Each structure stands twice: as C-alpha cells, then as structure tokens.
Image (cartoon, rainbow, N blue to C red; front, side):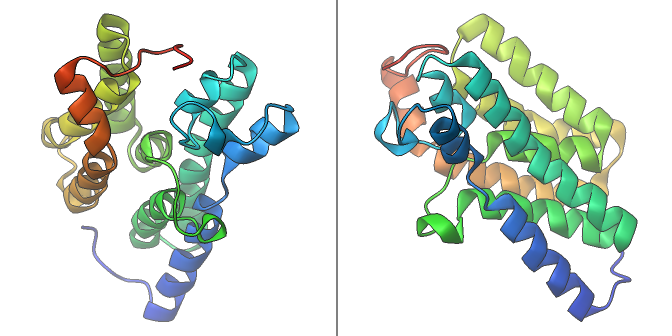
Amino acid sequence: MPEIVTSLPLLLATAALAYLLGSIPFGLVITKLFGLGDLRSIGSGNIGATNVLRTGSKPAALATLLLDSGKGAIAVVLARILVGEDAAQLAGVMAFLGHLFPVWLGFKGGKGVATYLGTLLALSFPIGGAACLTWAVTAAIFRISSLSALVASASIPIWLIVVGRMDLMVACIAMGALIWLRHTANIKRIANGTEARIGSKS
C-alpha cells in the first residue's frame, strides 16, 4: 500500500465518489440505447461486455468494454490529480467495488474484469498492459473469456513483483480474489467443459 498522507475525510469523499462512478451499469445503459432489451435476461444475465456480445452487437459490446474499463481508469486519474497517489489507489478499488456491487441494482453487478483492467492501466500502465496481454493471449488460445480473466488476474501478482510495484500488491490481491469469487460458477463449467466460448449466444 502507498503511504497514507491524505486526510480521512478527503479519502472517504474520494471513496464515495469513485464507488458511485464505478456503480454506473454501462452494460444495461448501452443495450437499452441500442434497443437490445434488458441485458439481465440475455445469455448469462451478467452486465459486462462479454454478455453484451451475446446480443450479437459488437459495437455495443465494445462500447460497454470501453466504458466499464474507463470508469476505473477515470476514477484513478481524477483522484491522483485532485488528491494524491494514496487516494488514486483507493479510488480504483472503490470503482471496482461499485461495479461489482452497484447500489442502483440492489448490489448485484458484474464480475469486474474490465473495470479491474482499466484501474490497473491507470495505476501502472506496464502492469495493466501485461495483464491485458495475458488476457488476450489466453483468449486467443482457448476462446473462453472467463478463463482468460482468471488467468490474467492470477498473473498480476507476478507482474507486480517483476516490475517492482509491491505497493499495489494488497489492492491487486483483494481485487483478484473477488474476480475469482465472482467466477465460481464459471470455474465449475470450465472444469466440466460446458463454459461458453467468446461470441457464443448461449
């Protein structure tokens, strides 16, 4: 963790605003704007870009991916500029939690992969880039989004050690653990060979 130099009230305000930003369910907003119906009744019911892709609209999926990752990155960058590095890391974590547990949807949100990667890119571009590359390579080989997310999140502590960003270790392990917990059902389907592949509408 970084050295805490920001006052508690300012950190709490940063956390609250970052959570609210992260809790915007862009997948639902985009699918409604595109006239694709309620995303929660499509495919897996998840509000992330992978499930948006199951609607058959690649532009909608891309928009969701960019917005979900962007809200994590924006939270980090704004907190860094306006407050400081300690607040930036907190903002990234809170934006991620906002996506997972949005107040607007009864705290039932997405799995957080895009928001996590966007947060990482803003916190440390080399780490975020390595994680995205890990996701892309795994996806190219296996064509399974959930497996790619699991492999990428598991690789991040290794990248942190390689790059020497131990100050991010606690936050990344915590977010990575939540990624794995949110993918419990996916892990079971991967194990028995029934997990849907990228682009599948099932």
